[in-house]
Image 1 (cartoon, one colour):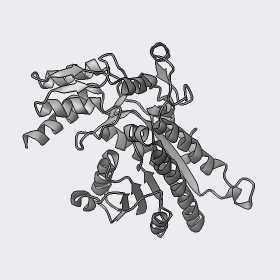
Image 2: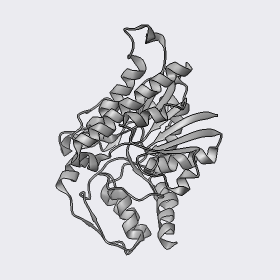
Image 3: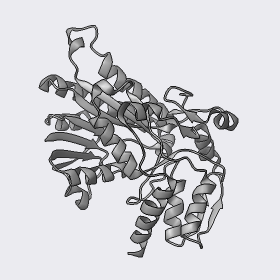
Image 4: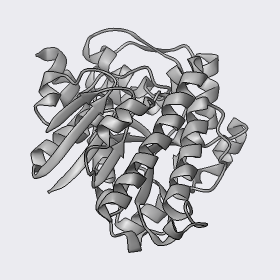
Length: 336
């Protein structure tokens, strides 16, 4: 039985992760979010706490628990971070540092390293032009790391911060041989959930299309038809988090891993939506700023390292994601 902290528990990943933990049972789950956890989610956890991870007093409140694992999902996402970069830095960077230091103190107290799971993003990539993006194809973890957004900058910095805290912090002191944190990051593509509403993220044009069509509403897509980035169904995202957390540390060759599933164009997504909803009205009205952001992200990712080190493989390709998960689940929500 392990004690597990999930920050950002009210978010899209948090919602699905808490449900999975509840189905598995046998763990003490502490759910933290700046918002009140809905009753249906609160029923899936041992303790629900409300607070700001960038507030030192809230970190002290959390530190009373001897966590074995931390799933740090709390973040100010891409569109919101662009509107308020100072707040984004406070939440995404300072909040992450505070949790890493808390985990370090817990690791020193218990003598066991805390597994620190961190969801990163393809926003850490920054390709200078659409031509370069099209030529580059699938990117490895170490290519084109020049993010153009505050969110991407924050996430890339925290990837490196987590590696430093795990592998190098304390090397000039007697603590250097004491392993206190085991940081592991996943670079997620655009995640599509069938059970939560899109929250206005830069990659949310895919789920927004489905939700609009299921409601019989027209949709104006904010990117061009030829826009291409990688996507993943939420069940695979949760699976990847749990699979990497369970992987033996000696098998891991890096701190941050790409994971991929499918990489359609916006037009290919629209075709799948129209096949399910023949009356769907999908138009294209690219938003210049958001289009430029998506164009700077990779067309697809090379996830060879994850496949080799801990056996990663997505269960949902594009056809299965739409036909078995997204379309029937979202349709059922509005039909009900």
